[in-house]
Length: 98
Image (cartoon, rainbow, N blue to C red; front, side):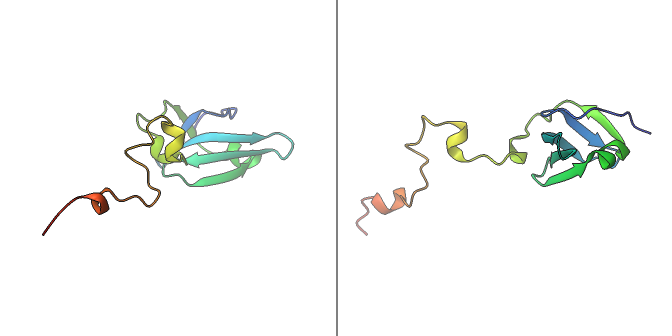
C-alpha cells in the first residue's frame, strides 16, 4: 500500500498504474482535490477517494509544459513579432514573379 500524503498545490504524484499528476487546486470547504494529469486531463476527487489512492510523491517531470493549459502569451510576452498567429501568413508577402 502507498503512503498517505496530504495534498498540496504544486505537488506531483505517481499512481501505482504509472499515471503522473499534479495537485492544481484544493477546496477545503467542499473537501475536494483537483488534479491535472500529465496529458492535461483534469479530475476532481473527494478526500475519501484521495486517501484511497496508492501514491508515490515524485519530482515534477522535466518537461511538463505539455500538461499545462498555456496560451503563447503566457510564456514569452516580448516576442510577439515573428510568431504571431493572427491571420498573418509570411508567404503571402513574398515577392515571387513566376
